[in-house]
Amino acid sequence: MKSRARARSYTAVGIVLTALMLFPVYWMLNVSLTPQQDMRRNPPDLLPLHPTFEGYRAVLDDQLPYLGTSLLIGLGTVALTLVLAAPAGYSLAKLRPRGAGAIGLALLIAQMIPGIVMAMGFYGIFLDLGLLNSWWGLVIADSTIAVPFGVMIFAAFMSGIPGELIAASRIDGAGTFRTFWSVVLPVSRNALVTVSLFSFLWAWSDFVFANTLDGGGDLRPITLGIYKYIGNNNQEWNAIMATAVVASVPAAVLLVLAQRYVAAGVTAGAVKDQS
Image (tube, rainbow, N blue to C red; front, side):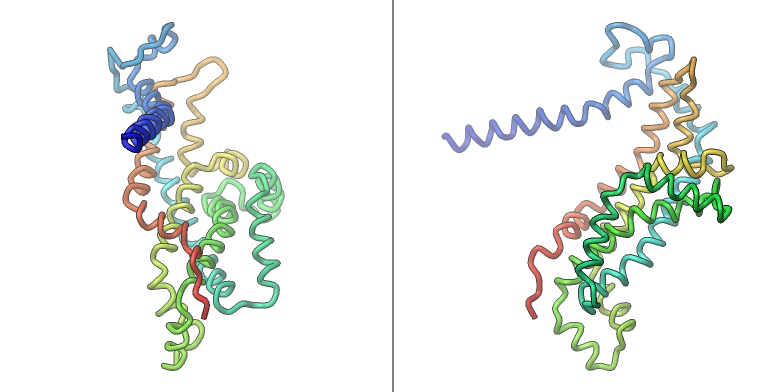
């Protein structure tokens, strides 16, 4: 009886905490359906009693190009991150180059640098190279956040691949690249999905790099599309929240589809091969 009561209490606490964490999502949806004239009502309506879809019409009219640019930047960031992080992770995990420990420390330090500091550095570099206000400049900038994380995930996952598998491929005549491409990558699906997902989400939700490096470009991401609704004397809150709802859908769908791969990918390396 005590164990059942304890389990029920834990469940109740979990439900309450989940409701608190999801309330901002609900409130975002509620405000996206609230008419503009009811925004300042006090107390606010907890339910959209007189829903309007003006905000979603604004999304369809104004925000589709921004969504397309964000999709382009996100996919470009994923591709560049995988190209750089997967071979680097394999090298650290299985080839064990000199200075591997220092490289791992550098990757950790790279993830601690505030984004605004990196954005200021990129601004000076991009200004000299003519990369400002370009979507591919944002791909490069966003990849600097994703690559260190990706290398660490790949290294942790690939270190758990049995050494016998790699040795067998070498006995069959496969070189280092062939072993990596034909043996290691196919069994690293969980790590590939995890790194791809987080890389896409970082690029999709980025505002600091976008506002600093692409504030005046023709192709701007959705985070800047939302920001254009905010002015000194006017805030179109239903349009802002409607855009946020629409922009959240791809991320939510990807998280639902990839959750089991992510769970396996982020816990990789907990038990390592001792061969």
